[in-house]
Image 1 (cartoon, rainbow, N blue to C red):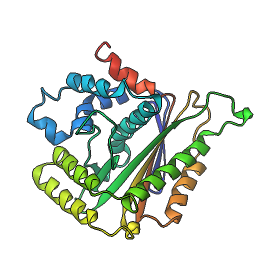
Image 2: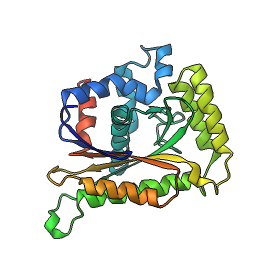
Image 3: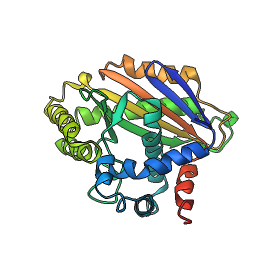
Image 4: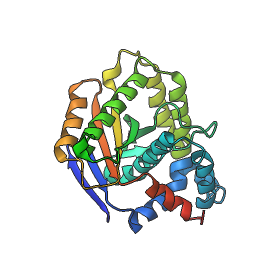
Amino acid sequence: MQGITVVSTGESVAVVVHELSDELRALVRDRLAEICYGSAEILEDPEYYSFENTVEEFFKRYDKKPLTTKLGMAGELIVHSLMPEHHADLLNTSIFFNKEERSIKKGFDLTFTTLSMDELWYGEVKSGALSTQRRDRGVQSASSKLGQLVATAAGDIHGKLTKQRNRSWWDSAMTDAAKVLQTDDAKSIKKLLRAHAGVEAAGDAGFNVLLGAVVMHESLLDKITLEASIQAAEKVTASQKFHRVKLLIVQQETAELLIDFIRTSLGK
């Protein structure tokens, strides 16, 4: 895709977004309603879930949030948008919008299944911005920020799957699956989710996770290195807290690029 550099290592993918290209804009525009509401849901009433209506609802949720929350929302939207392009072996079974209210989504950020519908993956996305100060004054590098975000994402999803587990998160994931997948596929995934909801907290090592890290800063001259991507993946794998691990790493100049495009698409 134009404007994007991709480096793959094992099951990890590092994506550097150099520019918000026309191709990426088209991808977001085409998939925004699907990301927010679920593809099965919008098939029932495409007019109700139109791009225009989806954008209106998005900013009702986004504009009143504090800056850190906006950063997280933008990062999660980027991961939702780029996942099908860079982890084609996984199928998203979750939606972006919180269903009950206009607050941030609780529980699992994302859930995925394999194309054969016989395996579950749980996603956790962390976003963070670097300081605008110069690096020679001791500001952390993009690679260092990456390591921090991946470690935080791994710790948070591990907690959700073990000590802090809450059955309502699996119930919510099942509701999402029904909004994304056709009936028979949704039934298969809901069966897997119900089985996982009943797993004892000590059985954490049996879960598959996808960790998303979105590093945002003003200058992309300080790019995330291949070595940093490999180290971040290997560190989580070596912890043996999960069965399998995938990473999607995104580096972008500013969270506002994507949000500004969505806003200006309706002349806002």
